[in-house]
Length: 159
Image (cartoon, rainbow, N blue to C red):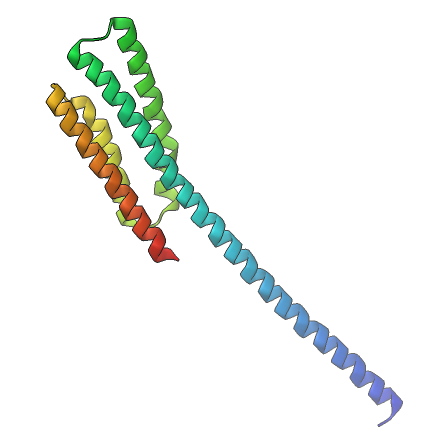
């Protein structure tokens, strides 16, 4: 082999090796980016579920306190106003995580149980007696637990 041909083959081999290495690095980087995006998406969905469960619990408690004071007649008008304002604040706090769950969690079961949980909590305002309030609160807690269980099943299956 002539030195020119040997040099040309060496250069071509180097270029081919560099090209193959570059392609493999590009593919590996793409896989890494996709994996990181999936992990971020999963974490965002988990955070939304946890935030919604927490916000619903806070709203249920604020609503129960307000309605109990109203039904038992133990609060003055000013205190009832404060309790109503607090329950409005906690209800508003459920909106963002509820929206995020609907946007970020593709599972229809999780969405349906989120809907049921929110509805059960909001329905507590329909109670007209202390017994109805206790029953409504229990329905809300049950819906809350069902939501968490359904979300846990979804995330466990997603792994």
